[in-house]
Picture 1 (tube, rainbow, N blue to C red):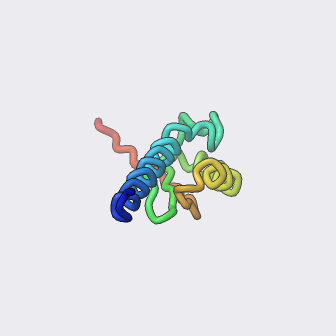
Picture 2: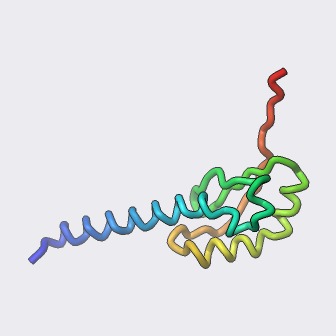
Length: 99
């Protein structure tokens, strides 16, 4: 018979692995979540406290993402419920000219 501490430890390790898989999957599957047309112009940068941070390379793409925000959020929540994403924020990529 396993000790309660061992059972809890196994549970926490499995939970952590499942969250890591979901966490990395949301980064890798951004094109499927937001739309393939968004993939070359935006990327997931972070996930913290239920907020998915997405970076776009132009204000026009941020506007399009904002228009699709509800759909994107539903896709994330449906496919990755373990991540508990409650909001998405969009930021503009900081592009420095190296000339």
